Amino acid sequence: MSMASLIAQIDGIFRRYLVRLPASAVTRLYSNNRDIFLDSFVESRPAPVQVPETAHQTLWGIEFRTPLFNAAGMFKDGRGYELCARQGAGAWLAGTTTAIPRKGNLRAGAVKPFAPYPLSGAASNWQGLPNPGHTAVAERLASIQRHVDCPIGASLSADPGVETDIARSGLLSGLRAYENAGVDFIEINESCPNTEDGAAGFDHMVERLEFVSKEFVQKRKRHLPLIVKFSTDTDPSRTPELLDVLLRLGFDGVNFGNTSTQYSLHRTAITAPELPLYDYFCSTFGGGVSGRPLKQASLDLVRAAGEYLNSRAGHREFHIIRTGGIETSADVEQSLDAGASLCQWYSGYFEAYSRRGDQVYAQVLKKLKQLTA
Ligand SMILES: Cc1cc2nc3c(=O)[nH]c(=O)nc-3n(C[C@H](O)[C@H](O)[C@H](O)COP(=O)(O)O)c2cc1C
Image 1: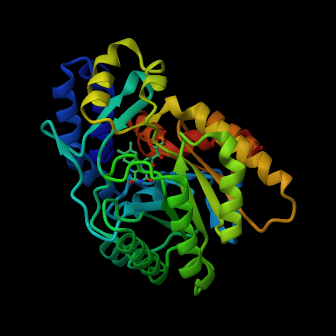
Image 2 (image 1 turned 90 degrees about the horizontal axis):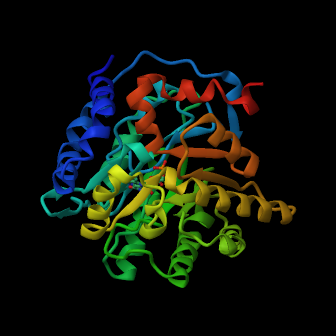
């Protein structure tokens, strides 16, 4: 067993009691020590785990070992490919990165604030997109030794809090850096709630995507699918409008989605012992809620997108990804039924990792009826 897996297992046992301690102390504990765990986690090298071969997917001409892989933010600095490939992940996603490296948020003694709600299968974070920048991560990705069926994706975003022209040219430089680094697909993060820009307006976002389409999508030098990730707070009735924009501009997929800022709505999904921590985090930092509370919203968005795509006959290859509340094989199955081709997980992954260690993918995928039958 790796050190990371051992730490996660021990933490999994004690976390449900620790979160009842004073909220500011718990937040500092889980924020300020998270990097120590993550450093050991990304460098762990488990023995390769077998996952059912029938879970294999070919999408956009790319081989995905399974339809499940990590969501953005887990491997922000581009380390961790070997770990995920050995665990049997369907793919691996690095980032999110920005053009200008970011240290992340600091408030109330908490560095890159994060709080888990293990009894609720949820978490909050207000990390502020910490990352070493597109260039450093692209360089790292370019030197990775690949595994068959475990493609490499890069998540990137425009720099928050800078002038529009600077943000756009930074985004373009990142897209080009990842194209040159040989990644297999790119995800543009249009949905981080934890930065100076917050949730930008719809028209502003469309203008940025139009720019990306004109300057990059239409000029791609090779086959390189581009996905756009939105928030799970997106109104499902707007999915036709969003998909029309993405299809018109030549994008290849959509991801629903990112963390939520609907704090009062999700408060009802937090168990009583975790409410003081939840209330402290939301009032002190805000941030984004992740995990089980997002399950219904991400499914509703995928269903709405799937139905709309089906009604638009003759469009080119375009895939829907579901992120938000994925924990079990039933969640993956429901996602595929609703129209998703792939799923990503973050909170559910770490919860499962604390119980299953490196069998984290195998445990979910062996029960996946749809693909293994
Ligand atoms: C600590 C943390 C950091 C995250 N960082 C990013 C990020 O850098 N980019 C991004 O697109 N999403 C980021 N997310 C959001 C996740 O990718 C995912 O969309 C969200 O957590 C919902 O999935 P889940 O319910 O499986 O956690 C982050 C989430 C967490 C908990």
